[in-house]
Image 1: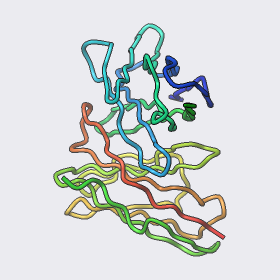
Image 2: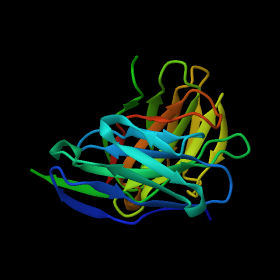
Image 3: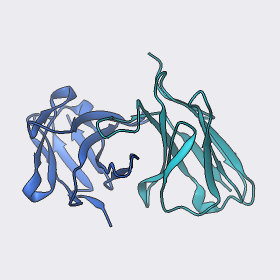
Image 4: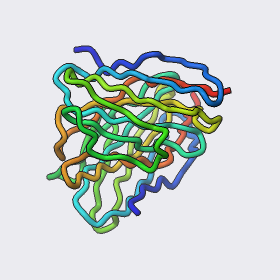
Length: 115
Length: 114
């Protein structure tokens, strides 16, 4: 069955530290990849997406992610985190097959950034 | 442009009751998907509707059902509620049921089953 794995469930960083959140998926076909963020008390928002083309994609708020097809990975990075990045981050894969969309989410990573 | 709206935002029910949740997609969006979010299981896909047709369904029992209206608004229904149905139910809309479409999420309806 298709699945998405996020390696870290909880991450604690100090402001200005660099961030990398791992994401691997298991699906041999063509996929669209997403990172969503859920700030405390807010709804899911799209950080960035990969459909095709340049495997290094840039999103909002200084986030970027790199799609490595050979490793089935789509890791999220940010060079310098801020306190306001405290949130839960979800990696998701869209399996588009047979004419329908189906987002499969990873378990999420809770990031806490200390000032 | 208004985002995805969901009503009600909070709901408390007792076991055995049924509940109907509503979702209004972004104007012009024709695909609506529903997800269940729980601390234990995370975000799980329930079903997707496009042009009033259910196109895909996740691994949930038949107590979970939905429908979509001609104006793309969608409802989901859960019958014979169980304690384990307590969750945040999220609705997401996208422009079309095609590959290169991102889904926009609503704030969710938090259902508590007592």
